[in-house]
Image (spheres, rainbow, N blue to C red):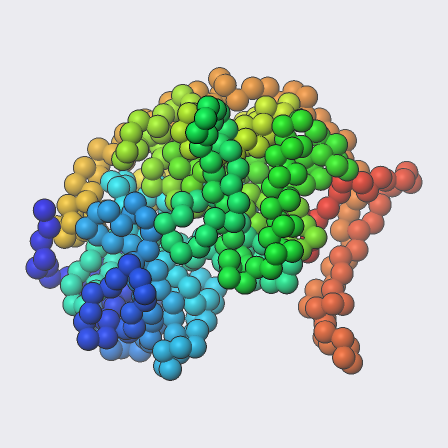
Length: 466
C-alpha cells in the first residue's frame, strides 16, 4: 500500500534531493551516477524545496555515485542507500562536511527498515556515543529521489578508518566485522558459535573491513586472526593476567560498553551479524562501533528473540563466538560490567529510565511530522505511536531484569589507582627540518607521589595515542 503522488514543499528536517543521470533506477550494485543537493537551514528554521537553487541554503550541490545497500533491510519497498560524494570528473572522491559531520566521501541513507518507532538505530548510536565510544554520526532528513518523495531517513556516516570516524592508523590499524556474507567480501575465517554442538555446528563469519580483503596481505590476515584466536583461548581459560591474559589482548572498557548497549537493547543480530571490532597499530583490540539496531528494544521482525529477560550472547540464536559468553563468565569482567551498568542506569545518567523516556519523546517530536508523510508514501510506520509506547514499557522491564540479573560489583568497587597525572601534551608541533611534526608529538606522565609505580598493564586507551 503506497501512494506515488504526494506534494512535498517543506520540512523541519534537512531535505536531500537526488537526481540520477537520466533518471535511471538505483540498483543494488553497481553505483550509478547522479547529482545531490542538501537543503539545510543551519539556524534550525524550516527547510523549503523552493531553496533548491539557493546557494545560501545548500549544504551540498554536487556529484555522487549511489547504490542500494543492506541485506534484509532491502526487503521493504522503501530502500536504503549507500553513496559517495564525487568531484565533477565522476571518479575522484570528494571529501566534504555534510550536515555538520566531519569531512568524508562515504555516506549512508538508512531507511529505518522494520522499525515503526523510527529511532532504534538513532537512539542506540547516540547512547553508545554518550558512553564515550565512537558511533556513526547521524542526522534525520527527508529524501526526494528523481522528483518523487521517498520518506524519512537517517543520514549516516559509513564505518571506515578515518581521523573523524574510526581513528586508527592507516598503516597497522584494523577493522574487522562478524557479519553475513551477502556482499562480495569473502569470509576471512570462521569461529564456532557459542552453544553450537553436534555434527553440523553453526559458525560466525569474520570479514576484513580494513584493510579491504583485496588489499590485506597474508601476514596482516594471519596477525589479526591470531588476535581473535588468542582472545578466544584466554577467555575460555578465564585468564585475567595483565601481562598475558584477557587484559593484555583487549580494551576491556570498550568491550564492556559494547556489550552494555547490545544487552540493554537486546539486539537480536549482535555478536554474529553487524558486529565490528577495531585495533590500532600496537594497540589493544576494541569492540565496536555499534551498528544495526533496528531489531532491538523488544521488536523482532523475524521471531521473538528481543526479549527483556535474556542475555543475547546466550540466547540460542546469534550467540556470537564463544569469547563473548566466556568474557561474561569471567568474574572480573562480570564485575566491571555490573559496576558500569549500575553507574549508567543511576538517576540522571544515560540509561536512567526517566532520562531515556525524555529523550525518546524529544526524538519523537522531532520526526513526527516526517513520519506522517512517510506513511502516506510507504505505510511503513502506521503504528508508530503504539510502538513508541511499547518500547518505553519494554525498556522499563529490561532495566528491572538487568538490575536483578547483572550481579554484584562489590569485588571491583574500590580499586587502588596509581597517582599518575598527565602533565604535558605536545600536540601537532611544526615540522623540524625533514622530520614530520606528527612524529614529535608526546604526552608526558608524572608520578605524583614518592613511591614507585608499576606501569605494567597501563596504556593510553584513546585511539590515535596508542
